[in-house]
Length: 238
Image (cartoon, rainbow, N blue to C red; front, top):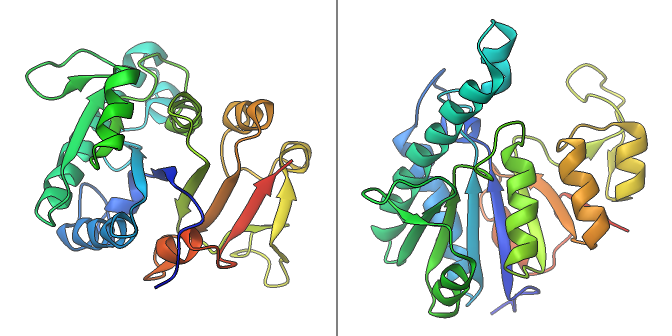
């Protein structure tokens, strides 16, 4: 059996990834698929924490563009991430993975508050932990929240699951000659504004030397391949 390269990691999922072919909400088939992919690395003994966006329900920056107050819009987006987190928790537990949802905003009837020591203890006990509601603050994306939580729990890597194979030097949809990038530095991502994550998240990862792997979630088995050290996706490091 392949041995995992990492003992503890954070997996970042976009809310849009849960939609599947729908234009809104959560696809039960995609939810099942994601849970099975997580199960594949959980079975390797890897400690798994997850951060999910809320774009399948609501995006704060999009609402701001239509005149809504940004702080209010972002709080609505945080609640959308809680919905996604509870859905994934249910799917994981149906596959035998004990899971805890911790939120950065207080919703005690729904989930635990984010308490770092408790989160680490859950991981040590073999539970998956889903961090919901971003950082709990407006103006910060769930990408930044994922990097922050990864640093706090001392994760060895952040896996950014996307709908493309990794980073390209230009948009592969618009440019058929776009060149795939296997490895790149944080500084190059910032300078070239490649847009895989927001600049605050990349800067925070760079300052703390947190390795990032950007890969295609839709490739069955890709999460396990990344965890076991195969050359899947784009590796971002110093």
